[in-house]
Image 1 (cartoon, rainbow, N blue to C red):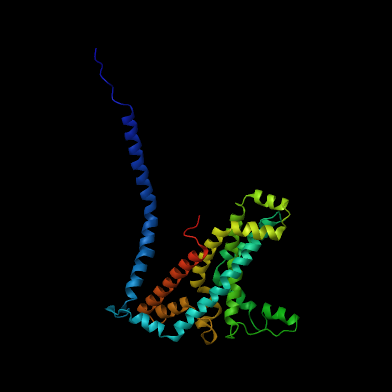
Image 2 (cartoon, rainbow, N blue to C red):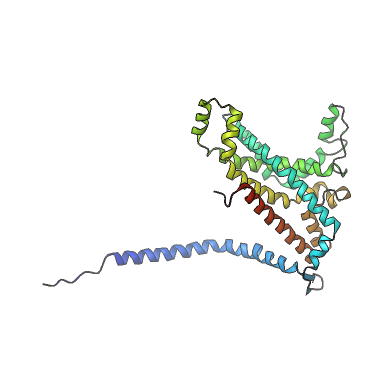
Length: 309
């Protein structure tokens, strides 16, 4: 006698899984929508507009726009002040990024040991990062004050007459660099500290058995293990340094004495919001973007890393 085969029981299960998959994707799209809208509206559209305006003559008051080609780029590179701002940005980055990274990794290594009250030390070092830059700059402005400031007061103990930090063209940039190093250590320290806690302790124990001291273990084990993290910290520090603005704006208004602290972002600010020359500001922003892109590519090639794991 022939028997009728019952429909496979797997079919309803597959339909249920497909229905669940559709619902999960729909929920994911709904949750991603605010972030995508924010990304497109506040980042995507302004970025495209910046690149478009960089190649036009745009009169913001009259509302007219004409094609300019490369005229804006020729004009800004013919401007001595813009070329100086590029140099000042490079100098600031060169001294700020490696010094802050070196100090941060040493502090992170020290705070990764069994140190009494280390949680308080970690909090104290991280606090400048979450404190408003303007508030910090105002405090440091008092510290740099020539007559009653903290730095010159300490120097007077050793019979040294301190400089007029923020009004002397020779000392204005070092003063801002000093404050930026102090402020930037906290975030780098936290990143390094998290990476240090992921290094296997077996490596240190084996090195200690072989007779390696703390310095040798730090150089031979810690630093190589921190390679990918160091690259990540370097890239974000590089981008942050090229985008610096607040401390220069507060400590050395109008570009500092004799334009000694005029950086690229400050020139972009002046072009856009003081002279209302949006085309020039857009061209300067494109150049800044190109600098960051090239420097990031060079750093990746120099470290031999195509990605960060």
